[in-house]
Image (cartoon, rainbow, N blue to C red; front, side, top):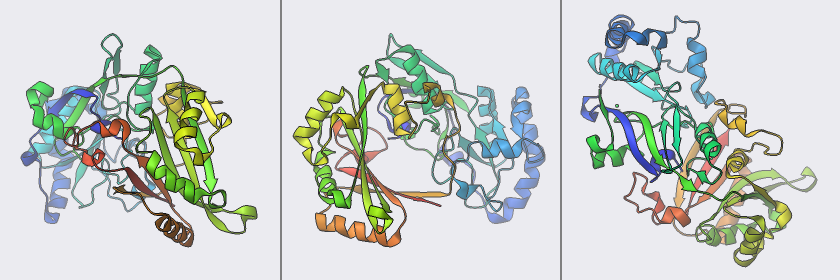
Length: 420
């Protein structure tokens, strides 16, 4: 679930530019644009915001490679052949964002906006049409202001979800925010110079940018979000089952349980190819990862009633805080790592080449269909499938409430994973 798609976003502080005023490009103009960029464009930036000089990094700057690579999360887009930006602006002030937008318009320059770099196709730091471009990096604009009395928070676009979660928990043990499971994901969003809020931009544009992405409208500077109540104790679990442990029947039953269970329970399913007994044959492992807003006894009772096929026991459950559950979902050992690890903006895992693709499922897959999937996965001996159920709270959001219509009519999303 992406932050920009959340109905809990109350307001946006944005710098706006009309879509029709964004630049267009032809390949013949590339070299000319790049030559102009090195002189007139940088001078425009400095003239528009005198303090921007320290935020400009060109390829002639020794720090340019490290600034560029610091928020690249997919090694597919870190090759020597990948087209690089003509410069990077690490905005320190609103005026730097305004200058970037105004000068990009004036000099017909494509702007890429980056806050966390998590998007799978490198949209915030590469271009696929060979057009000259620069990066407006928002990572310095990351202040977070929590107001527990009103149960709201203002969070700047350069903050990460981990920083947001940590700051909320620092103020309250019974508040959280429903967003992504990856703490290194940037809060970011894309709107783009007048300074606007929800009222001045109008309802239609406010609706569109809460899931628009791609720099289509401009730059989001900050969100005002609505916090939600969470219990002091939550329960998480991870239960694996292979085909030889009746995984086919369990997965088949999961399809009927996960989208329709208690709204306080979320059960993700991950399917992977693994070695079977004594490493002689390949098999399928189905891993059920869940979070329950409550204690383990209540969860086991609920699962015994609705999903007995899994055979959940209390020893499979971990009672913890909502904040530590964020670490659990990111595969961080919550027994040995402090919660401050959520403030680290670099992922703890090794970066890799990756590709992701999603499908949306409207009716359960038959057992015969599942067996067919197992055969194909074992034949390919690669990849994984992540099943994220909808229903529950997701089903309470009308399909026209945000630019993410998938909550209506879909049982779950399948995301295909390939790493190399």
